[in-house]
Structure formats: structure tokens, C-alpha cells
Length: 273
Image (cartoon, rainbow, N blue to C red; front, side):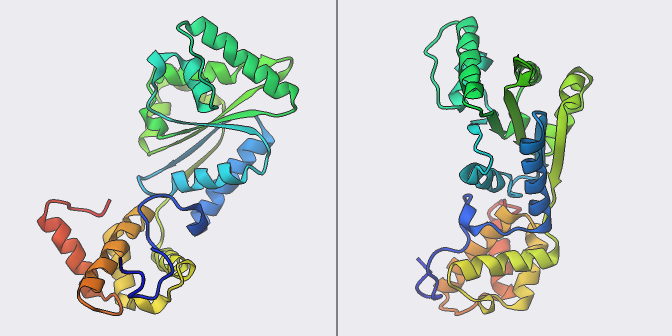
């Protein structure tokens, strides 16, 4: 809609994850390092937490797309289905539908899948996004599955990504054994003010635009209104482009940012998220 007006090759600020737009702030670099360490150095559990919109899913997409380890990767959302049959649900994450009505049969199929994976000299790694949604009994069942061994080797590794509530959930006494198997944990923090500016400039450049599309005080205002959360930054910047385009402006000022926030507040949307 506004791309041609601002001489952009694409929208710089989408509301969905875009791995090719990834800006590697120090926190994201460390989170990726901790993730890669957990995948290469051990079969223990890896946990990444962060606020809504902090970049966990984008980080996950980057790891899966690159798959530098060559592992067999599976992916699930924390909302468990398949009648609470955890083994069938795990298999579904690896693209395998059991068609089974028995959890015992599903477990047998999972064990066979893991045996074949190990026989090919590979490891099965299951990523669970929005893991704060997992019920405690399911977390414990996942722990038992990750303890499975064929010969002397563990065959299933878990990576949990979730909102800060995930850490609170894992800290209950009943999940002590699960916590003892966590070998790598990192909490993604929001951007500092300079990182917010660098993030915006990075995305503008990748979309064919220039930093001058935003005034310096607009950049300061964006950080203040979004608390440095990437998804909030994207929504605010994208909407600001629409407002500026509608008014025939060639750059975005702090007034435009304040107008976007004011309008959302007036309509009951108190924050950019």
C-alpha cells in the first residue's frame, strides 16, 4: 500500500516472523548460542523464555531453517491435542500421524521412529513453542520420553520456548526432575534504546529504505511506546507508515507516532501488542 510512496521494495515491518529480517541484538545472539550449545553438546533439555513478541519464534525459525546440526527436527505448539496421547502428539510434531486409538501403540511407534533415527546416526530434536501452555502432567511425560535410551544413548531431545510463565511453571516442586535435566536456559530481554533504533534501521535497509524515513525523536518515541519489544515495534512502525502515507508525508515524525498511540488508546487498545 505505502511501499511505492516511500521507495521501499517491501514492507519493512510485518507482524509475523521473517527470518531474513532477523536483527541479531546481543540478547538474540546469546539465546542462539545457548540453543546451539544445548543441541550440540548434550541431550539435556533446553529452555528459552521471553515476553510476547520478543523474537522467540523468529529465533526458532532461524534454527530450524538452517539446521546446521543435521538433526531430525520436530515442531509443536504447547496446546496438546490428539486426546492427550503424548506419544502420538510427539510423533505428529515430526510429521508422523499414527492413526492409533491406543497410547500403547503410539508409544511403540515412537520408539521405532527413534530407533530408526538413531540407526541413521542422527538425533531427534523436538521444539515446543508456547510451552507455557503445557499442563504439568504432560511436561512430566515429556521428561520421561526424553529419558528414553537405545543402548546407552538418549534419543529424544526437548527444546521448550515460552513466555515468562514457563519458568514459573517449571519451578513447581513436582517438576524437580525436569528442572534437573535443563542444561541450557536463556531469557530474551527487550531491546535497549540503541538496539531499538538499530533494529528499525536494519529492517528499513533490508526493505530498501533509509534511516531518514524516521526522525530521531520518532525513533525515541517508538522505544518509549513499545518497551523495546520487536513485535510491538513492528506494529507501531507499520501503522505509522500508513498514517504518514494517508497524510502525504515523506517521513515519520514523533507526532505521527503519538497519533497512532493516541488513536489506539481512544479505541481501547491501550498498548501496542
